[in-house]
Image 1 (spheres, rainbow, N blue to C red):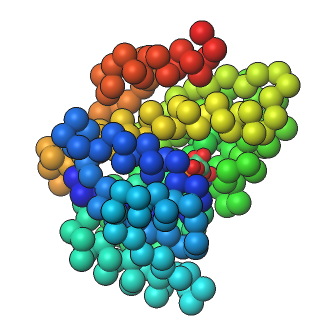
Image 2 (cartoon, rainbow, N blue to C red):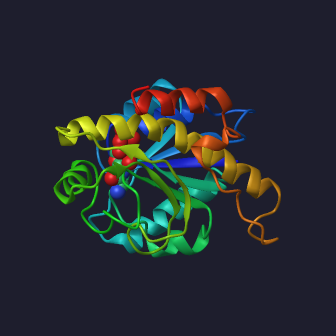
Length: 225
Ligand code: GAR
């Protein structure tokens, strides 16, 4: 699966995706799209991944046209949103229906929607007194954080956590879950989904099917065992 990553920030999830790409997972990152100057760009350069910054200030229509051009040029099969803070233009959602995944740092459908990204999310989780958080991977549609959920991984909230503490605990798990979910999508596309109607298999950390021991070790670490 030829994948494009869209990012706006540090790009640690893009790095995790790059580290696991290849025959084992069935995807390769061929392009980075950003909407602003960000650290993800330097990571792409370090791995010689093509990248383009797409301006959104002239509206999402022109941005969508430019993005579709880039995705077609590189023959991209799927898009992975790794800390991308813009709404994906509707033309791109339509052309890549069931082929765009987003990672969100809380258990949707709670703590999602417009303005809910990064630190805001973890602050809201702590304010609500939730005892569980954790990343969600979902398909992307025209509305923030609303597409069908593909994978989730519960992570405990500890008493005394700061937003930064919680963010760091969730992020470690994101770095395992996102490559596994991208691999599941790659396998589903190889089988001809969605044209033939069978979606990617559900992913859950205990399943161990995506990356076995490593997945279990990471969840152990996340829970402090
Ligand atoms: C990640 O925690 C990701 O889940 C979150 O932004 C961070 C990006 O970190 N995404 C959202 O909040 C989307 N609503 P990264 O740039 O180091 O991958």
